[in-house]
Amino acid sequence: MPIAAPGAQRAHTLSDFDFSLPPELIAQHPASERSASRLLDGTGESPVDRIFRDLPALLDPRDLLVFNDTRVVKARLFGEKASGGKLEMLVERVLPGNEVVAHLKVSKKPLPGATLYMAGGSRGGFQATLLGRWPDRDGALFHLHFSDEPHALMEKHGHVPLPPYITHADTADDAQRYQTVFAKNPGAVAAPTAALHFDEALLAQLDARGIRRASVTLHVGAGTFQPVKTENLADHTMHSEWYDVPPATQQAIADCRARGGRVVAVGTTTVRTLESWARSGQASGDTSIFITPGFEFRLVDMLVTNFHLPRSTLMMLVSAFAGYERIMALYALAIREQYRFFSYGDAMLLERRAA
Image (cartoon, rainbow, N blue to C red; front, side, top):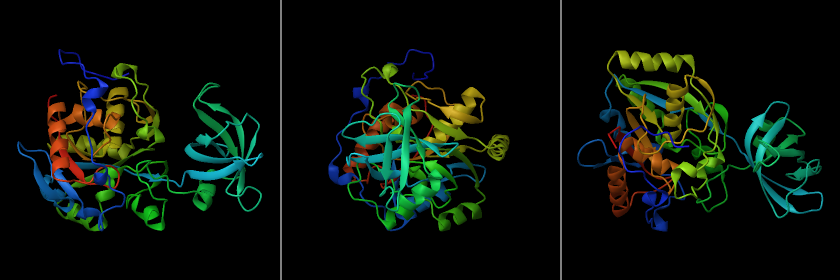
């Protein structure tokens, strides 16, 4: 369910978050240099066209940048059933005991107990045994047991799970560029894309300016690409993802507040993590928070984010953060000025405003 503040604000519907995007603006490859992407600075009254490496000059030394340090795993696997029917698997989550939760793309769904032969099966690959559905017998995901440690198998046999709007097969370049330079904790099947713009030189510039950094973890799931299908947003079921806000980050945020600084979230996944912690009081666990206009933000003051899919939950989140009318105007400007959209695209800098 959307979490909204009480008040008289008009209830938005799915159609409010639609827009027309020329296909040529969907970035198929990253910029030649991470920090050479464009940055639409939407913090002032008039938007300013900048380069991403300008970011340190737009922040105050009292500010705190919070990153998502999740690491994208090679979660896309190909295999076949015992009958020879081809299948594609996308591992969503790794469980104890060499078990995983995954999406399956296959002509006929296998039954519990079936053996799947992945990446060649007995011919140099591995086997996966279907245990059932997830999270219950009617769940959309599949619960499987791998014949060896899942992360090692994915690293050896898997493919980078590029988003559905990137049309080329994954390459060695994607393995490097669809990953942040500070990726640490493996578990994501999609990159925290706003952080892809940071390189070592830019991090050094932030350090030289005295701007502090902290990290959270949210393992981004494939549900981040799940389309909203209900016109009434309250009817949408949000996907669940695991997050963690470590004690060092909790202290860094308290210190930032004490010195009068701003909490700057790098990416919508960081926003979801911090606001989940702020609302629940739980520093670690699963979140299915759905942020729509009217939401009361408790922690995040500024946001670095990429441009998002129309009619997506992420469009709703940034509209809640910076104001619906302002976001739609910024998107229209970005399209006119031919900014690059989505995971490998350009970025924008926003500040929290009343809706």
